[in-house]
Image (tube, rainbow over all chains, first blue to last red; front, side, top):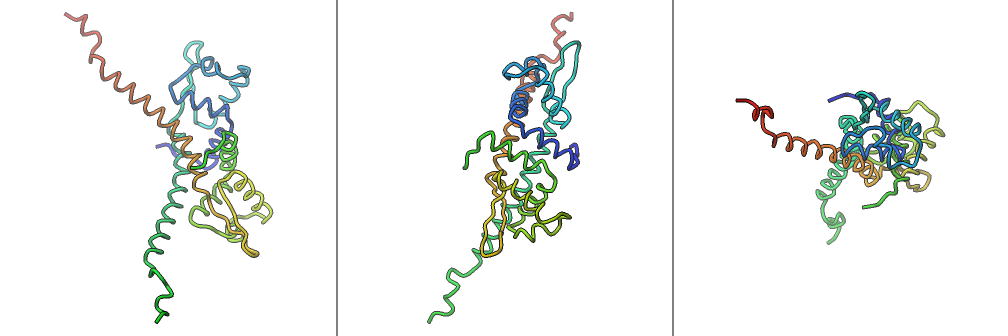
Length: 118
Length: 118
């Protein structure tokens, strides 16, 4: 598995913070596409699309390859997984903490004031 | 489960694109902390910390509560899960596509030129 530096993760989160770029990743998750087909549903100029694509490629989330005159783009699942794992690790840390807290609370007597009652 | 608008997801990705803010989420995943304890390991002014905290709170990833003079911060696991799920859904779409491609390739004869051989 590829290792990514914190700076690389900054750039990945940054790349995914734009709705157009998230839609591009969404389309590419369904399979590789040429730049022109990828651009079709977006109401923006081709240079604007290419600029968004460059941000995605620079982040490592998307890669592209030119064969003849056609550039084909695809997602990089290892990069998606890096971002996903960063978040899930934090969420799991939080959930384990809640579980430990639950075990501790279960270990307490039902009514801590019981000992003082006659 | 809370539903988040695309714009809210923009802001969450944006909030996580900064290494200091990710470290803050990392610390808070281990349990709620007061602002001053949260700030301890960072070599920056308290106003700078408060500014980062505001970005995290505005995104919904962190919430805080003031009791007396102490403001205590904690992570919001549902918000973390929203970001995580957005990515895992895309990754799973991609993996299912690879699986279908694998099944299709398995269904082909081992050597497509076989039929032409004597």
